Image (tube, rainbow, N blue to C red):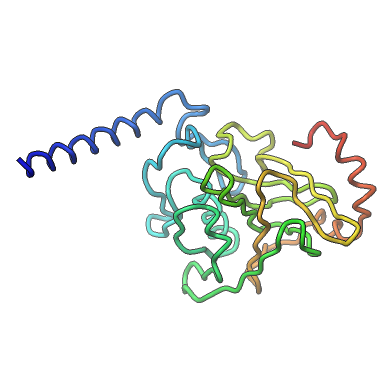
Length: 233
């Protein structure tokens, strides 16, 4: 009787999970696996943010990037493609903030990282930084890649946030960035912990003119223009 009960339970869980996974290929915001944006590193639809993962993704057949098409998978894949580094396996996105180092994608040697707390950092974000959201965000957190920096905003690339087509080929959203009277920077979005940066020579392969301009701009003047910009979301 106990054996039959166990078999029945296993069968039920299997059918339930299969049905749940199958349902996440229907009624999607955009079809699962549909390219949403990303000119250099494509971002794909996860159907809906509440859907479970439907498989694992590998670069060039062997390098593991993560679960399709979660936010963590995109952040790891973006770093692997653009920086040649990756971070370790985490269950939830907010746990990336707790990591003490990343590693070289090929040699697996440690790469130092630096963390900048939102509202408390006098160092602004840079292209290639990871923007980390706390556990309070949906209970899992979230991670995005900063792909553009302007005096009053940052552009981010991400997966499994809205699962809609990006408004621009290079970024999914723009977020307001301000600097207070004490010189501390803030990226304005729900439950942002801060940004993380890989140290050393594994930075972007080319400098951004926009990024260079950030440190030379009066942020308070820029903010006056930002709050009325209809393109800023």
